[in-house]
Length: 131
Image 1 (tube, rainbow, N blue to C red):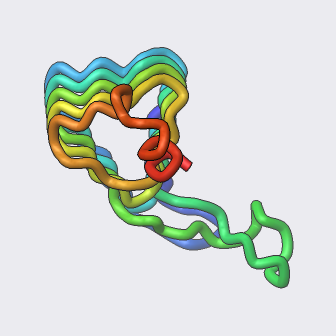
Image 2 (cartoon, one colour):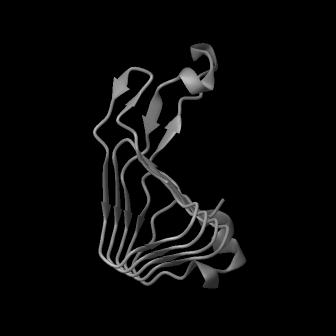
């Protein structure tokens, strides 16, 4: 599902989703944004990939979480020729350089340079980068 969020709880947004040429988006992939998601040419987004540039407010004094305003976490950029494995998640504000590989079930919370292979990270790096 590709879901640019233009209004939520009375607040209007101007989302922009850009998808390059020759991009494969697998079944049940979910892309949602209030700001922006850019996916470069020739990327593969496997099944159940999750990409979202926002979160819900979590202020206990502001009432129900679903009624709180969305929090813009920053644009997401996926460089050319990246591979996102099954059930991987790209969190707000992340930029992946070109030719990055994100392994199955990974949660990416930090940006990576080009040619980064998350599948070959050491256990210590995985704990930091995918916590």
